[in-house]
Image (cartoon, rainbow, N blue to C red; front, side):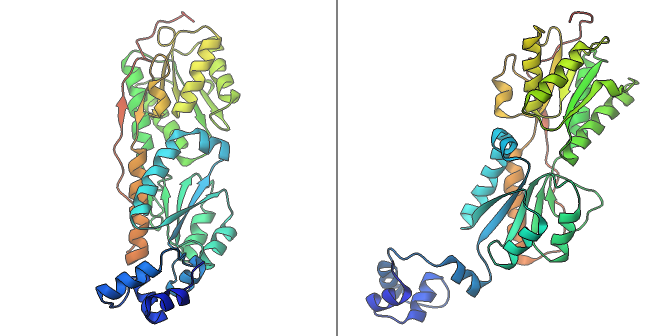
Length: 337
């Protein structure tokens, strides 16, 4: 493997000139640059040595706060990662995926110059991590988890409450009053969607029933299917179910198929996220579209801005969503199930 000394000897220039050309710093004539670059073919810079000199690793840590199974099966996250990677690639940054690490590990990576900052994706369950990173002046941006009282936390998010409220009101306007919901207990985003569900019922003078709200650990296994069956088996059967994300809504489809319940004739179903699967299930799923890709791009841009100019903390603008109307809903027909 070539060294700086090899390039210097081959190009006939000093090692300091080679360093200036390869790092695009300082003056060198075009002829010198051409000689150095030609001689440098095959040279691989030492990332650790570079980070010691520049104080930067040009690597961003992507902290994933969910199980690997949930992460890799959920297309919502892949869209966010695509947005992040497009921005970082343009700026020649690399990504380091980190699954469920504690704050001590994250601080060690930062102080050892393995990463320049973090993008945090998913729930952290508590504010401890945020406070530790702030205290140690580690640059980070949270994707989701908008907390109104956390002025020092930079984040990019949607209004989960509002758009959950809107899609439940859509069901109510169709004539539904027995509306169940299946949520997951992982994050603030889900709790805000539950709050939107309850507020929509309240504003329409529909009594909230605890038995109509089911909460599962995650949203991709048989547990969610069983929760859906429980709602369909109730004496006062629900006529619509709101899945807190599309994966939960798809579990409702599976439960309905097993019980020979027809969607939407017997039960209406709505979701949240507008994942790719939403348009391919039968019937296609009515759901809340959210700009997952733009979440990633905005968060990455915000973090790079923090690294470059260290501005005062600010939250990113809330992103716009809309209901993607498809064919999974219709007015209720009671006592059909």
